[in-house]
Image (cartoon, rainbow, N blue to C red; front, side):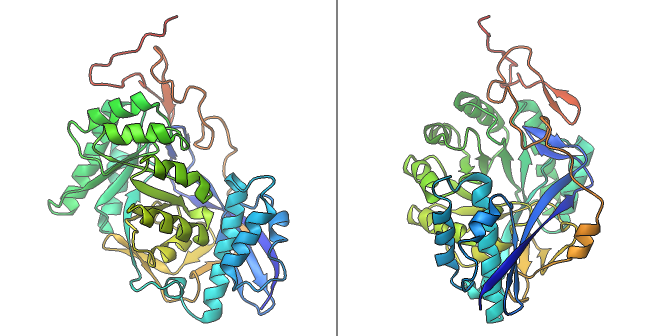
Length: 406
């Protein structure tokens, strides 16, 4: 079997409501999803979800090769990009191609990928993650009532701009999940997407922990700040979760060595081989792992085969336009199917015919870091979420404002 070519597509995830985080909001709820299709001379096509950046150059590393040599081809792709740097979207392209190769390998073997990788149980524990910072209280409750109806009893909320607001919203979701679980304790996490300094992180989380338990605080400071994450971990009761924006093992090593991460995360778009390698590194340090992403299908399959998987992120319960996946959600978990490979099918005609396209990457969307991020203590600064001002200076229970010195 030989790799003969590739195709790329871009579809959308239609949430039907605003989605975002402390950095900004997609007001129309339309989020782009990139797809890579890898073809072979035996008619098997593999599917990878991830970017297309530099794909011509990266694909040259695997063209004409046997796709079943997945881990070797992964390293070939890394070598083809080492001068420019295999990070960011380039690393995502490698991950998308890598996932497509694993899909091909499992299809050729006639097995679902979770079985090929050595998984015994097709059930993957999940938590709800609504990208919900732009929702009103009523909308927030309604969204998590839907998650709760699928048996989800843990939730990760977006926040970080205001302590009292975060406490209130976490309390609302706790009540929804507790009621649905007939009194069973709900699990809560808070994700602030690198919005804080170290001091802000400790102050904010400690104040929340006066009334609520958090399983983890996610990306409290910048992703590469090993000393900062370690300081936060020492200063709060919650675990520190981070890693979704890290790429090679070389980026994880300093954080793990510094005791800066308690829950090791990997992004869905970085690929199966990356997940397996980071999981092994984390396991060597007795750390759990948790995949994130809207459709972490490749990592869900891989999660069944590692000993330290904790839980996986479940975002939208609907599929991207033109994409079907052989899995369902039941009793708080992803249940993987028996289709060979990833179980992903792509309707190329439907995607190309769809008129819906995501909005442009403006300064108020989640992928653009705000100019004042990490400087919310400045007096008179307000954040804007879904068109509503947020008093981001409220970083403790007394609404103290740090002097500007100006």
